[in-house]
Image 1 (tube, rainbow, N blue to C red):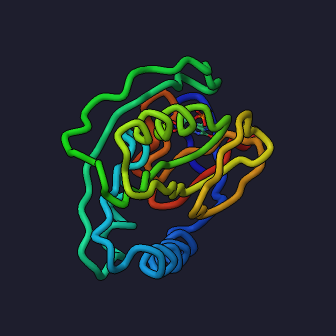
Image 2 (cartoon, rainbow, N blue to C red; image 1 turned 90 degrees about the horizontal axis):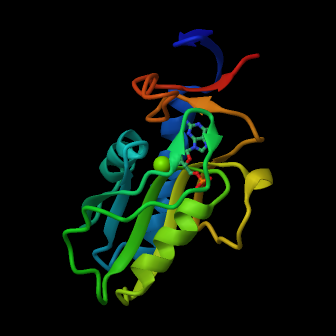
Length: 176
Ligand code: 5GP
Ligand code: MG
């Protein structure tokens, strides 16, 4: 058990389970894009740790850049869509993989995907560390999923509770 601010969380996925899953995901991505010099676009802030581990598991030429598009505060998805900032690369004709920490309602990813598709990438895939299938509110196809989880609040491994708890190497779930 850990405490983040006023809440208690229990361990759901250990560091070794996460790393094992990432190794497999990297192999899946390599099979699809290993000869295509893909561009990874990691969504800040939450995906920074997952993106760093996933990137280091790639043993083929690839690039990474970061964007920000936050629509989440505290423990409720506001559903509010904010603007995409920070894309510093021309993605036209590139094979792009979005790297996201968690897909909940899917609205953030749905919107981001739409914005990136307008720039005509050669292909666009989504890799997420965790996915809550029961919370999904839009038709979104995820190409690489680390872990499917039920509709519970997670912290750790980049995921925060009001800004705290991102530094844990394991993934935790709200205990109460
Ligand atoms: P969506 O647009 O899919 O509803 O929400 C996506 C964003 O909400 C994620 O990128 C993440 O920032 C936040 N989010 C959704 N579920 C959780 C959760 O269980 N824990 C944390 N810390 N953030 C979450
Ligand atoms: Mg996020």
